[in-house]
Image (tube, rainbow, N blue to C red; front, side, top):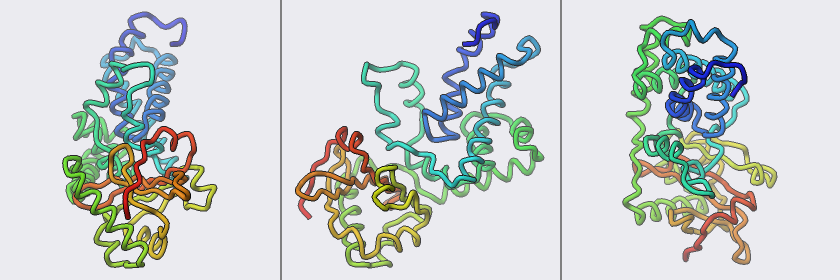
Length: 294
């Protein structure tokens, strides 16, 4: 923390840190970016006249909301995908043991499927929905962040709610056999160029994204939308084989039995909502990959 700040201000900020990280994580879908947003909020607090802040929690939430909104807008301008790590990477315990604050945050967090759908919202829609529906921030306060009227802000949250309701984001973690069947059907349709079957298997807002190593090998950074993803994979993936990735249904390209690219699927509502192409050697070494019979 910055030197010279009153102890009560530092203590007050620390009291709200976990809540602020939760807000930022739901807004950004990345723990590292969430921590950056929270740190920026502290810097702004340390430069302000803290004695005039009557509701420190509300003030900090508003500041974090504005910071996240700016980060989302910048990300949209660069057309970057926010979920830079797989779900299990985001929620994994640190190697040196559990972090109680981290686990408390993640235990109350949202699943990757919901984060994928949240990423389809505009920055304003996402902020309105997250702050109001997840953290009960009044629309009047959210409106001041967005520089819109309270009624317009309510409409943003309503549109976001409808988008999320239309996308069944309930994970089906209790039905691994169905997940494996969906992945096998996807691979068969991709190999056969069956565009209609691919559309049936893919969520309308499906997102295919690749890590930096896969991009260097020729994969696109990201492809969004069922028709676009179907068009990209149709007639391809002939060498990809079904696999278990850390026990979950996935696929792998493994010439001579050595995994070079892992296809990590996120499935909800009976459809594929995200496909992550993982080719980074360090990440591949951390995965438990079991190749299945085709």
